[in-house]
Length: 222
Image (cartoon, rainbow, N blue to C red):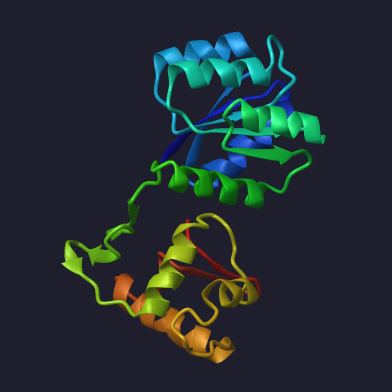
């Protein structure tokens, strides 16, 4: 699970992001100000820092400067200060991305993963029950036994893994795997590939526990 340092003095945002990002395999540790953030950075390692500009003490720009002097840690500003000067200041200080409030949580999670990939911090091995996926090698194993997945089955599995805890509609799944193997993907094709994927990764495909059907809504992986 990714370790995220969130430096934000709005408790509502802290609670909302902590709950949401946990579903995205990200553990959030929060600090309200610059001083506490630096204490946490000295105590433990993080994969990425999310910074607001206005803090309980100090400010996000000063904190970003301190982080850049001490650690090779990706930084994303998440702040209401969205004017051009503020954005340029944040990026010039070394931030890897700048997201304006109000933001969409799913977009933020996607931007975090993108920055982690660019910075070489993306986790290459993901586990789901007794299924283990090495994304660098595109290797999928169940109980140590290699599974032979088609390109569409593999892409479908990654979509589920990257959206744990989220109910994915059939339309969302279709948009994610569209034409990935050079073939037209329609609703019937999606049904076939979900069935095939379950046959390979589930202990009992007729009663799936990894990829669950949420009646009337879609599918969900916890």
